[in-house]
Length: 118
Image (tube, rainbow, N blue to C red):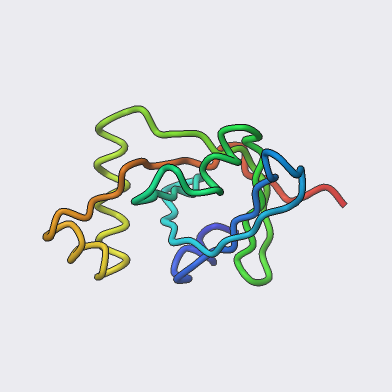
């Protein structure tokens, strides 16, 4: 399923609101590497990041393909660099952002991808 969605431009990421407990959905950039989906952000204070830190369970909607998993920060500097490069390769504006000092502050992986329970 990931091979089929890897070329899409965006994914709809749903987290659980840390205060309300309600779903919070945003559209984000992503890159697929092997069996995992990676995301990053310029601003780690965004709601989706803080929500996922509180409740790591997330939903990814690729417009027809829906998967669930757990979102965690990437702590390995080598993997982080690889994923940042993958995002620059996929999104030309991320490449330009890197030239002017607008680098992502944090990178995340969605582990344990699976089809949602019915």
